[in-house]
Length: 419
Image (cartoon, rainbow, N blue to C red):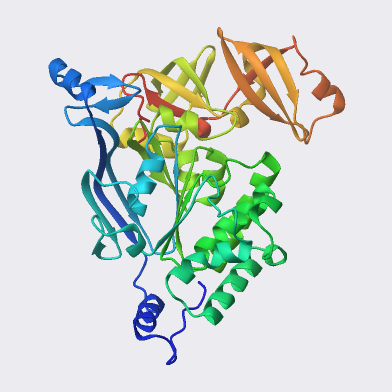
């Protein structure tokens, strides 16, 4: 974190404010049953009252109070933790971030920063900085002036402003652009300035709302690495919103996966990848998407759980045996999930290659099998050129998978039966 200095020559009110900032409490956050309801207005409200019953619209719950954009959001965020809110457009992640920032009113529930209830605290008094998707830089100001603006509003002494801006510029490698206007910068450089403007304030909490979505793929990769480095250099809690699961997996200490205003799962990147709570999480996390076989059965063979699919019967791993036994799961029809990279060629279920995509170190196969499309990622590291060439369009392959990579979901609820 950039240093906050208190010294005798400062104006009294500024000195006190800066001293308070230098002795900040732990920047943990707690969201308790936080809900956001957008009320009806005008004719919409009258129509709703006439109908008199809940309904579904755009997958969000409709109640007599209005449209529920975020449903009973509960989350404990530790000091200096990097939390990523991820999910498809309209799932409520940006609304949640804006409630934390104070830009949206909290309809129900409580938000604490440290041990302070901040539901009714103005945004400027929450000690939070926000980086937006569209940069939101002042076009008539130089980079230096953009970064210094918030500190000037606080009547911070000029020498402190200069030190903070130059430190932030050095961290973000934009020192050479301090005299330029935003129009003279690339997208990646503008986003660095927007981040710099936030960190000069030494906020307790840094909020980022899809900051990389306007950048091309190469710049996104570079900026992801920059944000990881930045996180190591400043002492701040991060809450980051994205619809890109790759960003979520690479940046977050923990990921909060959302859909239709509800939290689907909270966990580390490895937890949500290896142990998805339900079908939505399983298909949302991972590229290419997990294969789902709806014609599978969970059976017991010699007292052990196994999955049966077409001509294959695969005994599950000891870890999965224990989880299913603990839940006393009965034999049943299930949805079987297997990630493309976990499928092995050789013997087993037969399929025909429709599309073969060479990706360098691997080849992605789209195979028609059992009346559906199955995606496989096959490593070419230990394959000869002839073996790779044999995986061409129209060729026939056989595939299987080991028991430790199987994910077994309830057909009725979509929930992982190990959960």
